[in-house]
Image (tube, rainbow, N blue to C red):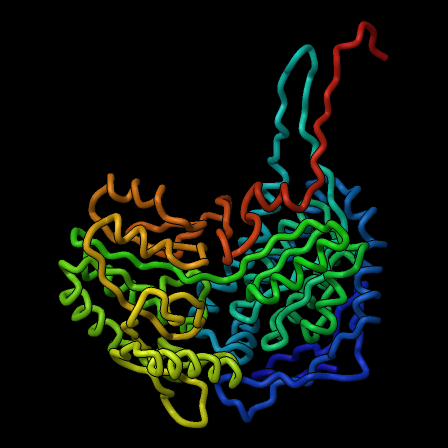
Length: 485
């Protein structure tokens, strides 16, 4: 069955072994733009569907792994071309499904998905194994495909993040079972249509839809699975890690962030304020966002004046409208979660400087909110809200800025504004973060390692790091023989 989603036909079934597969039960998918609008009744995966999908991936693994790197890369490039041809449809469906700004999806996010496949096709093809001589032996490091891989992705930017994880697995020679988040699964269903059109061999790339505690749990516990890649909450990450440990299945996870946004007195305050206001983009549902504003006490008032002007330029509205800059939250449950953070903050003595309420009753928009915490130990400082909520604190010197920045259990990203190169170098070495941006944000080189420290995750993705994760590595040593043949 297919649902009409904004004029685009979207398959509601799973995609297993090259075919669409229905389930006996379904779950509703609704649009955050208008919660009364049901978009689709999506097949609800069961343990039987999980078994079929992993079985298909296992059966297809040997032939896929035995293909030459160039032949696998050709499939990835064909898929990239098809994504580029269908950017408009994918962007519209994802906009309706999870409410990210349509223009952003069409111009930046969905095209990035095509680049993911091209980038890993190229990286896999140009791989040159380490070769060296040692103690009278010739040595090489060989990569071997690891096996069936389960990829579980979040509901924010689901199409792009799925391709970011699946592309290196496929390029490395693994087969994949993709399980998208149940709150926004529809664009990933479109991806499977393109996989079919690109003529991927059956079983190489599969899709299972459903609830995490049901079908997701079954997928990650399957002993036939040899790699697991997950993006989501720390709570779910812990559960997956426990399941992976039972089978000693290598596991990588990106688990969110609580990034510091550090503004020094020598930084460009106008640029910093504009960039800080952009942390509200996508309703703050961005794990990399710098949600803790840490500002030098010397320029705090001046920065906040500029920041408020920049925030006031935001426009809340329909994500399909080019004038809109702030989208709604994904789901009523998530809106209630964000509201709970603010209610508890106020109850514990934190001060709401602006915002702190719904934009319109009965809808999912939440106003851009800034909170001055009563203490650095406040929940609003220490836990990820994942909504349009920032905190602001001041610091006296560089050492205090570092202490505040490193004071949460997270460590995914950090943003620094300074005009001093030496200070930038010192901060990059002192901050506990997987990525540190100085005077910029969200500049992503696909060859760079990506991941978090502490509660923000385990392992690294990106470039050769991802290809190594999705491979079994062999050190091959040969002592020179006296004869050959």
